[in-house]
Image (cartoon, rainbow, N blue to C red; front, top):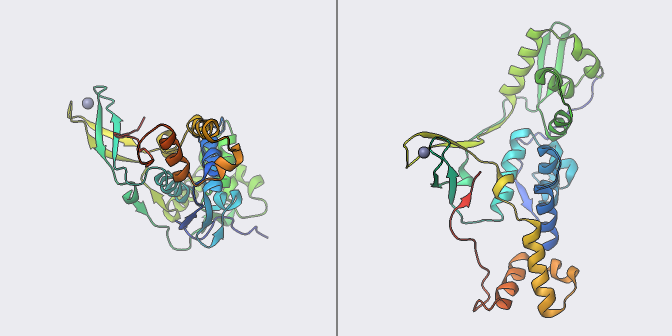
Length: 274
Ligand SMILES: [Zn+2]
């Protein structure tokens, strides 16, 4: 007996994003800075933004079923919805402390496609042949909730497709865990979580980590400030203001501020990477 795999067979499912309005932005902004483990924040952002994920409907359950690398890729794509056209980023140099500008194309972050048979692998273990699925958001969330233990053993238990997977994981030998880990890594898609650069000040090599959660998404206060400005000026209800497409909401805010033709202001300069 075995349970079916829960990981979506599409390694990088093409997202269809919901049109951005205040409701979506508030949900995303609150998820991005919620006091919960990173995998749960990623799930909440993808659930708020994606109407579809490849052949699957949107929603939290689909967002959890995407492979770990697929979720990271979707998070980068989701972040791009908020700063289309921005290519300049500002990153810190750990060597000399200077901040420098870096041109980065987030649509071209290196990806590695899933291996044959994805999302399921079969591994010959000391207990016999066992099947596992490539880690997805369910597994990442469950792993983040664990405080201790060998990560390879925890993932072998979470990703095991045998009915007794959780019970028999304690009996796997170190060599089993090594083989399972290697096979999961081989079949799983990959995505770079950063780029290499050289600091223009000191010339030192810098690994710039790209975590969209730290720079790409709006802050709740920023959206609320716009709601406040429009409510004060026009006396519209909060709901009516949040219903506006985000571009139109920003255009009204610009008009209220007296910025000429009401074209929504874009942030100037590079996005700050932490
Ligand atoms: Zn430097």
